[in-house]
Image (cartoon, rainbow, N blue to C red; front, side, top):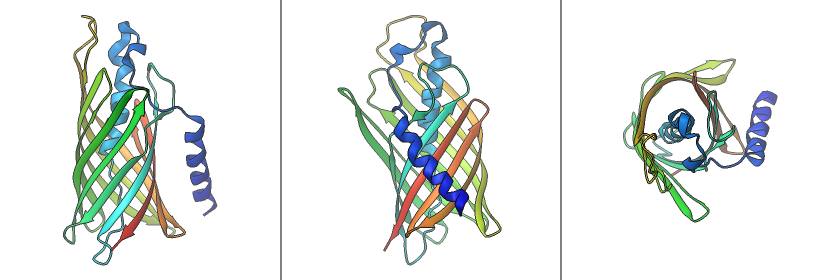
Length: 231
């Protein structure tokens, strides 16, 4: 229990000392443009592609989750760590005993620019875990549009009554570069990545709190999610 509260304390304080992720691609070095911009695209794709494992049931078929995504890139970028994405809101509805539909979105402003991200998908539950499929996009920045598709397979285990999530995910992404007139800068940045998933969950005063990491050799993302169930 003490370890869980340490995680919660750290997760709540870290965003206070961080800056929001920047989509100003003119800050990137032209000679290393793709390498420096790709972490921003990866962070946005992982943020939208991740799905929370809400404990929906026949008595509580609808849930709302708010996630705080924090990313750390292990390669050169035009912005410093951590990459703090705006909070993302996700709604989930239990359609059948095994199938959950979900949708997510966020909207925020950077100066005079409005950025909005949205996505949708589904979770299919088995006896020991679930499969998640998500599609989504990010629009609004002057120089960047992002599209992604994500699929993940996650198992749920218990160790000393502590729930643990273990899994693997695959994300395919594309970032379209706009309004930068330089022949040395690519018109799009595409890629795919396979990443490991670990996490745990617990409850505080009726609110479910989930910690989940998405780990790749070039990028680490920590997601802290607060959720409530209804109906």
